[in-house]
Length: 213
Image (cartoon, rainbow, N blue to C red; front, side, top):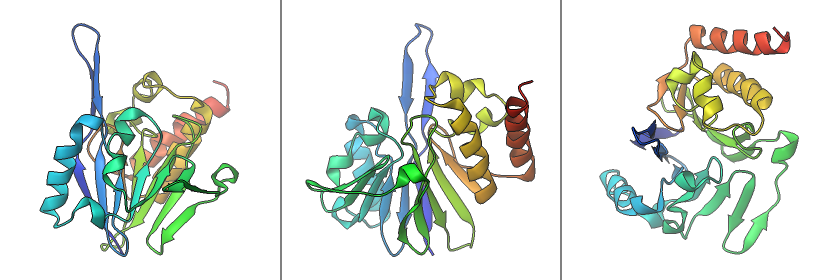
């Protein structure tokens, strides 16, 4: 089993002048493999190093870096982790070697018995979600921008306005991940619990679209 720690909660806001300020949630997984998910903007390297030190880790102790998709606020410090294998969306690499994996066919990439990377396109067509079985025997889904933040469960405009390359796939994958997880770490907000009400709300949204209402 693995331990999940959110190092920094993400955010996304539009200021009075119309400029967007945003940064992603950055998450650490400790266990058989040490994994960091979504490495914030290039200006956050000192923050990540300091957060790792609180967990008695250095960048060279990280075995995998996962960027849930390739946007700059999710990949900004990947180069801190030069001993790690990198998964950026559907792309898996180490140094100049790239490894083929059929994410596009819906196949998960298994890191170990408690951590796997699942394809969840929607926000981009190569989005992934990291599913972690924790020491509490619960599943945490580190979902990137599949979910912007908890409030987008009831207000779909929050994730639609953030950009979605395939809203239909995103709706389906949002429900699929909610059905699989006890907790979700969204791309731009704090971790939240997945309740039956959350699952039912997502199902109703999908049914409403499928029926063309």
